Amino acid sequence: MNRSGPDLALLLLAGFRAMVDEAITELAELGHQDTRPVHDFAMRAIANGAESASELGRSLSITKQSAARTIAVLQERGYVASAPDTRDARRKRLQVTTLGFDVLRQGEAVLNARRRRWAEQIGPEQLEALEDQLAALVGDQPVRFDTPGWMARDLGT
Image 1 (cartoon, one colour):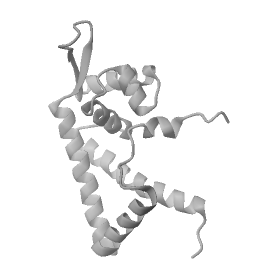
Image 2 (cartoon, one colour; image 1 turned 180 degrees about the horizontal axis):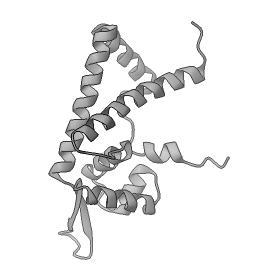
Image 3 (cartoon, one colour; image 1 turned 90 degrees about the vertical axis):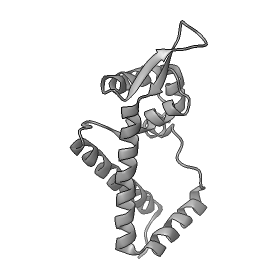
């Protein structure tokens, strides 16, 4: 079969989408309705040091206003909290709550289960070879947290 570059890009996106859609569905069944990929990116960025809306916006390559809206949703759901900054009493510092880390772990478990099913479907060696080949093509580094902003960015077109 002779596929094009766009075909490959769409296949890769479809794989991502299949995994994420399953995670969203299962998280909803576990009581975490309306959890979205951007929430995962945001909680991971916060866990890795984005302590304010400005920092989160820079981490995700989204506007400060979008970051503030995301933070509000995460706080409303109990996934993120703000605490006084011990270094500067005028600031509040964002942190992922125990519930937030639990949602992240549950999402990871769903994705790991999907990976196991794919390994059963095509064989563990084939899946490992695919992962190795993708890593050789794109690098071993995980996708950066700025993926939400990257996907929505305006390239001036």
